Length: 291
Length: 232
Image (cartoon, rainbow over the protein chains, first blue to last red):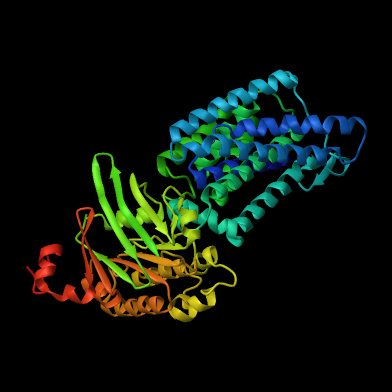
């Protein structure tokens, strides 16, 4: 019983991280039909840049070191995303293959530059005292507090995205742009600028995931590919461009991964892809995706 | 108000607009013509939605060629497109909030007074409306941009006759308020009821332009439109 509850909680905390990263991916795809293959690179770059800001502050024992590192990572990813959209992808709107190739190229360059700058040693943030240590969870016992915080952040991201999309003018523009981009422009809306804002937001979410993920477990080369793949699987399972679908996809993939690792560690990856294959066979647009 | 001079649009080998020249003043104008003559392409070219290969479009003396659609919209041209193209994901209220400007002549309240039906359906999604309601919404969306000129592409398409009569009243009212109206229509009755001047489009050119009254002549209708009042 204890074991089952622990596996479930592990699955949910992992799902929380997956949701934070994949929601940004889904948002960018939803509005701009860009499959952003550099999404993992944005996760990675935010982790490293955030750490570079965090480390000297942490050495001086400042209590806010982690928060500043988080803010720096997220802000850097957002600016990076806005630049990628403005300088590269904005020129090839609607040319999906070209955009995929450009973002793949970009993620290779980013990963190599990070390797050259920061070396290959894994890094890990130390969470501030307030959210460090362990908390008693009924049915599980002591559980790392930070992993519970992770769930809180994911819920906040989900609620924030829902409010943004349903209650603000930017949200109205984003949804209208998903329906009919050309007509949105004819309504006097600067669609390319909305695109830059969405790209920055999506990249910021990847960055948020990068710092949170690098606090829960060490950050190293290869995390970019891993989180890009996870984002792809999560939005394919949940449905492209749907926040609720992304949450559902993240929970399915996260929990399945933890169950797999507990029951048959060697083949646990298969379970994730089995879910994806099943969804693709029965409902190709994803569980909550629109046809 | 709007000047179009020698406008050409090509899609690959197809030469859709072959030198359209038009001058739209404060009086409402209609363009009629059979299917495939380039009427919709002309609307889209003015709005910047398709690229004009030659020619010039100017609003109040300012050149519009090459501007992105949102800049053309902000200069004062609004399009009610063919097929209405309301946004399926937005409610009626959200459509209006998207384009509403503070302190302008047309506000959300005025739209609801003019189209009470939209006020009743403000929470409904863009796809849950009837054809006539969708058309009202598309017009309301254009009006809220408070344009100098509104272009309507086949607004009467698929509407019940009683709704078409309402539509004619609304369009006349706009013109009396001083808004420029360019109406593209296949329905001659609507074109003649709304516009003072009618231009006839044949294979990518304006074949002739005449006072709306003269379109009653069946010989003229047969020659340019291939239709006659008594059928054919």
